[in-house]
Image (cartoon, rainbow, N blue to C red; front, side):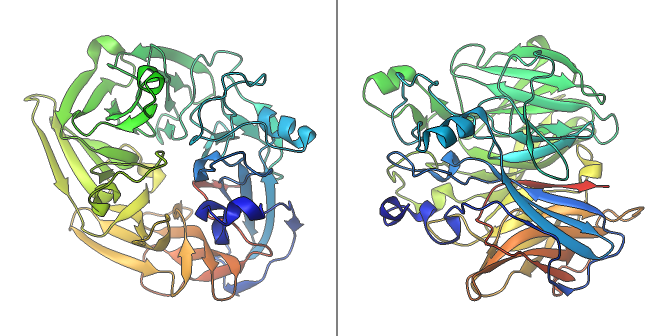
Amino acid sequence: MTTLAAANPYLQGNFAPINTEITTDTLEVIGELPPELSGMFVRNGPNPQRNPIGQYHWFDGDGMLHGVQLHHGKATYKNRYVRTKGWNIEHEAGKAIWTGMLEPPQLDNPHGISKNTANTALVWHNKQLLALWEGGAPHHISIPDLETIGEYTYNDKLVSAFTAHPKVDPVTGEMMFFGYGFRPPYLQYGIVSAQGELLSTVPIEIPMAVMMHDFAITENYSIFMDLPLTFSVERMQRGEPMLMFEKDRPSRFGIIPRHGDNSNIRWFECPSCYVFHTLNAYEAGDEVVLIACRMNSTNVLISNDTYSDPLEGIPFLHRWRFNLSTGRVTEEQLDDVPGEFPRVNENLLGRKTQYGYVGKIVYSQNPLFEGVIKYDLEKGTSQTHEFGKNRHGGESVFVPSPNATAEDAGWLMTFVYDENSQRSELLVINAEDMTSEPIARVIIPQRVPYGFHGTWISY
C-alpha cells in the first residue's frame, strides 16, 4: 500500500492496516489483572486486505476483530478478519473490487454497488456476538475463536439494514435497532426479543434520506435523530455531492414508545447539528433526557474541506431535555473539552446514570484520543485519565465488576498505541480511581491499528 499511503493519512502510522492474523497464548502483563476479571475484550475496526481503488476513507476498510481473553490474571490475544462475502470475493480475486465512500457509486459492479465490511461495532445479545455495519446485515462471530459464521438475518426476517449501534435493555433483554436507506421508507425501526427473535419492524416517516449513525433508548421510549446530513440522488445527478451537511435545515429528534409505530412518534425541532454517538438517555418526570456528543456540522464523509471555522466539526458533550407535556426543548453544552466515543455502565442503559465515559480528543487533522474523561453528570464535574505523551487510544469500554453495588465499580478497557515504543497495549483502568496509573497494561504482540467500537463479554 506504499503508493496510496504517501498521500492518505489513514494508510499511514497506526491507522495503516496489518495483514497478519495471529494467536498468542501468553501475553506480558505490566501490573496485575484483577483475578475476578474473566471474559474477552473485542474491538472492531477497518483494515483493508487489498490495496484500495481511488480515494480511501477510514470507514472503507474490511472489518478486523482484535480480542484479548482474560482469565485468572492471564491474557491471550487473537485477531481475525470478518470474512464477509465481499472479503471472500476480493480475497479470491487478489485485488480490491469495490471503491470506497469518497468515489462515485459503482453502478456497473457485477457484485453490487457496495460491500458490507462489518467493520464498525459489536453487540453481544442472546449469547451471540454480532459484527455490525450500518449499511447491511450483521455477521455472526464465534467466541472465543473470532471466526466468521456468516451473515445473520434472524431467519430471513430482517428486511432493513441494521444499525452499528443497537441498544440492549439491561432489564428486559430486548434489543432495539434501526436501519436507514436511500429510498422510502428512509427509516425502519425493529425490536429483537431477549430470546433472539425479531419481533417487529415498522417504517418511520422522515422527509428525506439521512445518515443516522446512532440513536438512544429509555425505559419506555426510543429516540431517533433526523439530522441534516442528507443523501440526494438528484444532487448527485447535478454533479454535486450525494452526501452533504445542509446547515440551513433544522435537526429533529423523534421520540417513540418502545413498541409504538409512526402514528405515535413525536418530533422536536432543534438548531442544526450532527451527532455520531449518544452516551445515554432516560426519563425524568415529563421529560426525556438525551446526552450525546454534538457538533455544529460535519464533513467526515466529504472529500473537500468546506469549513470556515475548524471548530464546526469538533464534538462536545451536550444534554437535551424534551418535555412530552409542553413540547419544550432545552439544549446545553456540558463541557468545553472535545470528546467522542461515549460509553456508560450498560447495566444501566436507558436509565439515569451518575457517570459517563468519553474519549478525550486531540486537536488534530486525524481522529486521535489522548485520554478518557469520566463525567459525574450529577455534580457536573469530571476527571481525566491521560494516556501519556505520544500515546493514543480509542473507545474506552466500561466493564462492571462482578457483584458491584456502586455504578462506577469496574474497569475501563481500551487499546493504546505507544508511538515511542511502537507497540500496542490493552489498558485496564480502575474506573473509581481515574487519575492513577492503569492497574494493568497487557502488551499486544503486534500493532493494533486505530479502530472503532468494542465490547466486553463475561464468561
